[in-house]
Length: 275
Picture 1 (tube, one colour):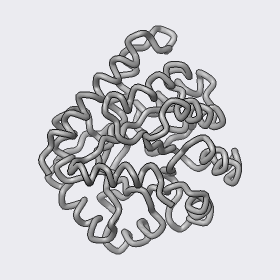
Picture 2 (tube, rainbow, N blue to C red):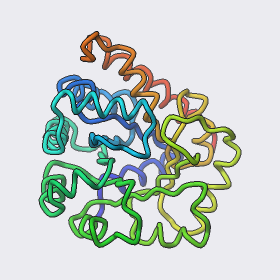
Picture 3 (tube, rainbow, N blue to C red):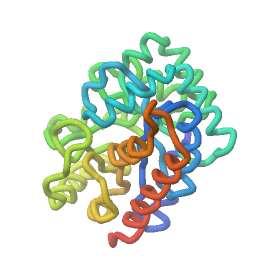
């Protein structure tokens, strides 16, 4: 089964350019502003959207994304409401690929079978669940693939050639290469390593490789877009959201505009990169 993710990456390949993958947290800073931001992302140049599922203990995330999750939870966001947010997005955008990203605990509590049915029906295209290794594929990965969702796996600088085949065995959609060892939001120390890392992954798979962690500017994005099939940006967008909030941590008239402006700038960097 071909998903929106497969279709989008095929189109990007035909255009001869890398894509821009944007991460935002569902319900941050509040449900109304969150939907406005979601709808603005593709118009500003996002090719794929990753939507975070708020969780109280996001162990792979840095302070910025942790704070976004806490803001969303404080505003009443739940996994059920996250799925409703996807439905609302899909009522206006039927083509942009959307991936839910987060941790297994909320899905387990919701119920795996129910979650997969509801996510698929809402218009979710894929999942990134950072705390489920390949050894646990029977828990969620295999059922997700059977439900018609892509299951996107993370690879890191410490994922060696011996480990890569296991990581890639049931991966679909794309591979998300985390360009540093650490939490989200840290800077990439040396972009020259990205090309070699992407090639090493491509020696094991035909899937597109998206690279993220530490991308903040159009220049950062362009540097990665030379080598990767897509550039992932998250923390910089969350910082942009935070910079516009009022004293009650709610969105303002500036919120969507500031995020869309940054996405347009990043998209420009991605599109200008020579490959």
